[in-house]
Image 1 (cartoon, protein in one colour):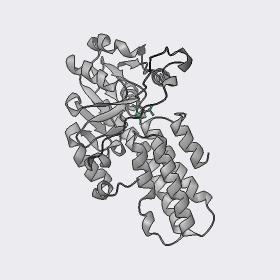
Image 2 (image 1 turned 90 degrees about the vertical axis):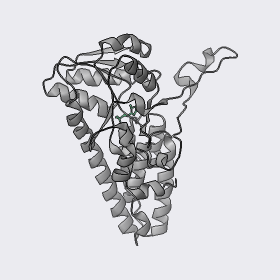
Image 3 (image 1 turned 135 degrees about the vertical axis):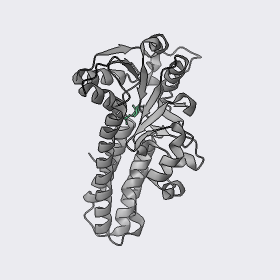
Amino acid sequence: MGLIEVADSIKSMEIRGAGLIARSAAEALKQQALDYRGNDLDELRRRLDDGRKALIASRPTAISLWNAVQATMRGSSTVQSAEELRSLVAANADAFVERSSKAVEIIGRIGSKRLRSGMTILTHCNSKAALGVIKAAHAEGKDIRAYATESRPWRQGLLTIKDLSAAGVPTTLIIDSAVRWIMKEVDVVLVGADTICSNGAVINKIGTSQVALAANEARVPFIVCAETYKFSPKTVYGEMVEIEERDASEVMDPRLIPPKVSVRNPVFDATPAEYIDSIVTEIGLISPYAAYEVIVKELGQESIFDIEG
Ligand code: RI2
C-alpha cells in the first residue's frame, strides 16, 4: 500500500485505533522514503513532507498519529544526503513501531495487577491497550468477565466481543445507553485514549465521558490505558484538541432524514481528569494530573516547542 492509500484507509477507518493508525503512518513514511531511489535530497524531503501532511490530515483528533509522524521524521532537518535521510526515516519508523507494540504488552502487565478474580470490567469501543489488560489478567488465570458497549455508530464493540471471545473471556455486549443501568454490576471501567491533554483530560471515543460520569456516580474506578505517545505536546502549548465530526451517513441513511432535521456525528469526547482514577502507561500507572510530566519526560521539551504541521 502506498502512502496515499494508507492515509485514505485511515480516513475511511479501514485502518483504525489510535495505536494502529500511528504505527501505520510510521511505516507508510518509511516506505515512502525507501521507494525513492534517487539522490536528490530536496526532492526526497519534498516527498516526505507531502506524505507527512497527508497522514496528519487523515484524522484530526488522535495525537498518536502526529506523534508517530514527528518521531519518524526526528533529526531529518540535519541530514546531508538522500541516502542518510532514507536510513534515518527507516530506523526511526522501526524504532517507533517496536516501541509502540512493546508498550501495549507492558500496559497489559501493569494494568492486569489492578484486576482480581471475581471482577467485572466494562470497556467502551475497541482499544488494543484496554483489551490487552483484560486479556493479560485472564491469561494469568484470573476469573474475570467483561461488558462491552456497542459503540455506535461504527459498532467497534462487535470487534471487542470477537477479540475477548477469542481470548476466552466471558463477555456480554450491551447497547451504549445501558451503561448507567449496568454500572451497578461493574467493578472497574477500562478504556483507551486517542489523545491525553496536559491537564489530564482524556479524549476518547464518543460516549466515554458518559461512561465516566456513570462510573463516578457509582464509585467505580475509571482507568485509562494508553501508550505515552497518546499524550499531546500540542496541548501544553495551549492548543485545543479538534474533535472530529464524521459524515451523518454513518449514523443514518441521509435519504431518510426528515425535513428540518439534521444529524451530527461527533466521534470523540473529553473526560476531565477529575473522573479518572489513573492512567496505565508503559512507564507505569500514573495520575491524570501527571500528564504534563509525561509529555516533557517522554516526548521531550523540544516536542513542545516544535509543533508546526
Ligand atoms: P488503541 C479508537 O479510535 C477508540 O477511540 C479507542 O478507544 C482508541 O482509538 C484507542 O485505541 P477510532 O480509531 O490505540 O476507533 O488502544 O476512532 O487500540
